[in-house]
Structures are given as C-alpha cells and as structure tokens.
Image 1 (cartoon, rainbow, N blue to C red):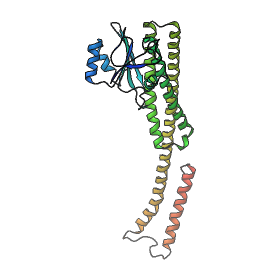
Image 2 (cartoon, one colour; image 1 turned 135 degrees about the vertical axis):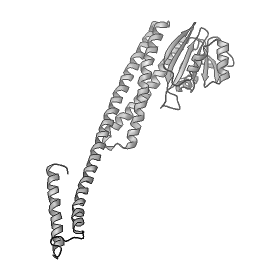
Image 3 (cartoon, rainbow, N blue to C red; image 1 turned 60 degrees about the vertical axis):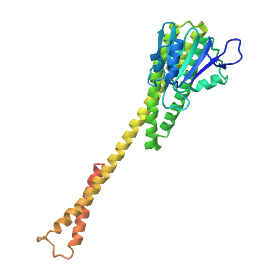
Image 4 (cartoon, rainbow, N blue to C red; image 1 turned 90 degrees about the vertical axis):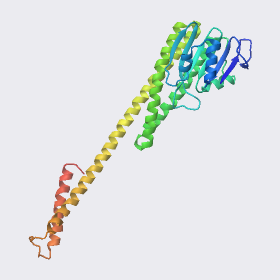
Length: 303
C-alpha cells in the first residue's frame, strides 16, 4: 500500500493527498511487485535497496546513491514484539519515503497528529523517526528486563515453562543487542554525512548514548539468564543424582533377600534346611546385612 501525505510549516496538520507532490512523505507498507516497480520507475529509486527494506534479516546500515540516502533500521512491529523487522527511510531532494513490511507502531501516532511531522523538513522527520524507534526499543528492552528479573526473584519456583520463556527472552535480547550495535553505527554515519543543525546533532548524540546504555542493559540481563540457567541445571543434576542414589540403594536392599532366597530355593542339600526355625534365622541374617549397608551408607554420607 502506498500513501502520500504532506505537511509544511504553514499547515496545521498532516493531510493525505491523492498524488505525489514535492515535499511529501511517501508511506509504503507491504507493497506489491507492481507498486515497487512503479516506485523505481517514477522516482528513480534503487530496486535492490527497496527489496532489502522488506527483508526482515537486513541489518541497519546507510547507503548513499547519487543524491539519495537509504537508511535501514530495525523496528518492532506493533503486532509482533518477538521478532524484529526492517524499516527503510529514503531521503531525496523532493520527498521522504518510509518503507516496511509491517507498519511500525509510531506511524499511527504520526497520522493521528500525536507527533509533529513536517514533511518538508526531511532531516527533522528523520530525527523524529530515529527518536521514535529508539523509544520503542527502550520500552521493549525494559519490559524484557523486568520479566527476566521477575524470574530471578522466583528462582526457587521456576518451572520448565519458565525456563523456555527465559530462553525466548535470551533470543530477543541477542537480537536487540545486535540491533543496538548496528544502529549506533548508523547514527554515527548519519551524524557525520548529513547536514544537521547543531541542536539536532546533540539529539543524535543523546540517541547514541541511550542506545549504548540499553545495549549494556541487555547484556546484563543476558548474564542473569545465563546464571539462572546454570543454577537450574545444577539443581536438576542434584535431583537426578538423588534419584539415582535412591534407586541404587533400593536395588542393593532388594538384591540381598533375592540372593539368599535364590540360594535356598536350589534343589540341593543346604545347611539347616530341616530346621523349623531357619526362616527366622534367614530373616535375621538379611536384617543384619541391611544394618551393615545402612551403617556404611550413612558413614559415606550417601543417604
């Protein structure tokens, strides 16, 4: 879907227009092959980069082709917070284009007028996009960190489902860290290559610092998950060892009377077989052997 929107300094709000107009914002969400071809033909855009903007595995980067700037970001789609997708921002002399497979959550805020978006000021728009992406990542990072910390506090009550959930959070945190690292490089290159006002440069530098802090927070949470997982493995190993020990002791206790009864069940002459009290002696003998084993297990701290 392709939409054209525009707002100048004289306009009170962002409005949709039917066709392209200089200084407009071209919003492209999940375009068809025909729509992509039209964009390439009408605005002389790079087709490979447009396709890359729809690839969820594309990394954040910046490309300069002729006088156009192609900036790739990772975003958190409003309908799926477990998987990152790609957002492409193209800045040309005549318009700004935002392309993605899934609509980012902040697009609705722009359309509803919650965020001032003057499309004729393309670098200001880029700055707002970067700020909004940073805020969404910060919220998602904080939510993930809170979840990890809650699991740590309830460590003694963790279940297999909790561990599975933590492993999912680990994957999310790893993707966040990768995104923060590459996005930091994007901020740095944008800062040095594009002509921002000094005040705007300060905002970008603040975004770089925030991204670095959030990345460190993700790394700290990853260490927490690793510690929880290691402790959980140790607990499982201890439980398994106790079960194996118990089964071993049980096997030993069962083997003694089985061996004695097996011997006295043989069709050969045996001592005291005609003694009417032999059964009691055998039980007493087995009991003495069990006492010896109990003493030994207790001494070796097996039980």
